[in-house]
Image (cartoon, rainbow, N blue to C red; front, side, top):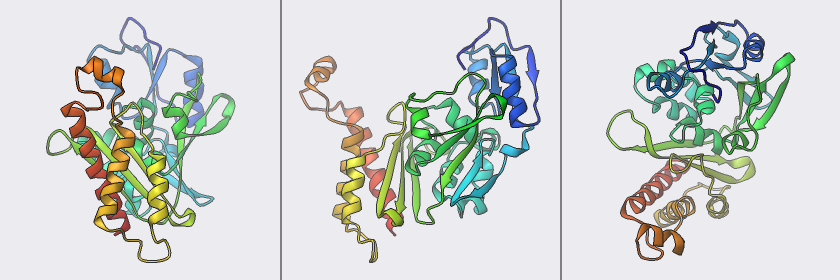
Amino acid sequence: MTTHAPQAAHTVTLPGSLDEAVAALSAMPTAVPVAGGTDLMAAVNAGLLRPAGLVGLGRINEIRGWQYQDGAALLGAGLTHARMGRPDFAALIPALAAAARAAGPPQIRNAGTLGGNIASAQPTGDALPVLAALEASLVIAGPGGTRREIPIGRLLAGLDMLRPGELIGYVRVPLLHAPQTFLKATARTGPSRAVASVAVVLDPARRSVRCAVGAVAPMPLRPFDAERWVSSVVDWDGERTLPPDVLAAFGDYVAAACIPDPTPAQSALDGTEPGTLPPAVLHLRRTVATLARRALGRALA
């Protein structure tokens, strides 16, 4: 969404297939794709975005469901949060279903889509830490019927961007058939944007714990050292339980990795004692630690 026009949108195209949508975007480079519009229309209404045209994706049935493929679930980018929150989907990918149910009030969940959550790349996107922990990849549709696949982390980090005329068609998620959890903290009760969120995924086949923290940085963060440490202390052949002090240590490890102590230069700018976090940041670190501890405890239980 980098091309803007000074006037309001005056061209709307409603393709019936993914390749037709790609062709429409290629023919009209200044157009913006729109599915649920929960982020796009908020930007338009606020006067931050004035697209020259829109390519509506709501009629593309092929990206509104999912299928199984080589031990993975191929999720259509048009899946709504409401659909992902249903019990049959929750049995497939529990953490992503939990994130979908926490995505906002009913009107947002009914309209907002998985692909939109990824493409807008808002730091508070609830699906993003789950997809990062699951090590999902994106199937990108391009001109001429081309398809390419990239890890979601590369797109969110800006290492591999969408090219002109490309669209996110599907999300490939490995099916682990193992416990996974998603928790988030908000500034108020009820559906709201996350202040911090944590996804924890167990992968018994690789004897590993994967964790991703959302909302505290521009993209989800993976505390790899904390993952490796806790994976080494889990009894994968036994009950897979950990004592409270180990769970607490994991939470502190994750929080310190994602919200590190400030450098002397940062302390000088903030006017705080060297190595001391401002109260608000310290509270955020404690929130992340609590979420990580609880998420891992629930996954192991």
